[in-house]
Length: 398
Image (cartoon, rainbow, N blue to C red):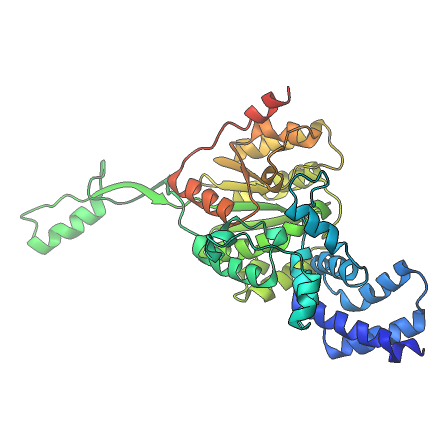
């Protein structure tokens, strides 16, 4: 094919470099395979060209979102003048829409190799953060709109966010200076040192222990823009806590606790991706909760476990089963916290049927979309505080 050795080949090469910069592992061999695939398939429609390169460059489910954004930005001119006018003139009715998930990171990767002059022509981002430090901006930046450098910085910040939780009282007893029961064995053993003349009483009291943490993470298509960064947070959590279990669900439930035990985060995420067949698929919360309650609840929800449910609540098949299963999960754990990225929108309302079915059976309803929301969650769990009543969301739309 003559075009493959000309301008088209150069564009595919530069496109592959941009994908690698954005975080998709693309090597020289993949570029040669892409050229051969385009030559064999031919450049027909735009959709054919899209899926031909997708079949070569995308090897994991979580990379599909980045590839989609990169393809749309690279092979289509964007209205930069209209965006600039909308940003400079607040009175214009057509305000600019927020970029899609991963678009900022991909845009940075695509134009990283251009000279400064061409960059200025193509970029329409106005820096209004002159009085705000980079750290403060990073804390409030939405995960879906972060650049590659910001995501790397966020991953480092997550290592510092994983703090000990408030300890809970267990049924076991441990040595305690002000215990309510006498430890006969330790008392008699200690009296042998003085020949039995003096007996120093030893006491035992309730043993305090951090509660187990169980995380149920939604990896459906509507949550794909946050799933990967949440897995980095859960990897840091699993690394520092022994009693932590992680389950991923979309259309089915998968236990990835052992995969997250890998020391290297990339190896852990690769193992998770390999063990999950329904990444970025549909959402069946009721059936996934049913599988968890039936197979795993008695194994991992012991000694006052804390459950973090991370999902947007957009159930594919909402029915009465969802309310029954979430109520059963709530009764099996000490505390059920629902983390929903949709709460990042100021105008959020609990109108979806799945959300309304789940809200009455959770203890807390919190946002989870940036580092600030993660820090607030850790602070609440450590201090044992409570957020507003989740049922109040139902009253707002009643």
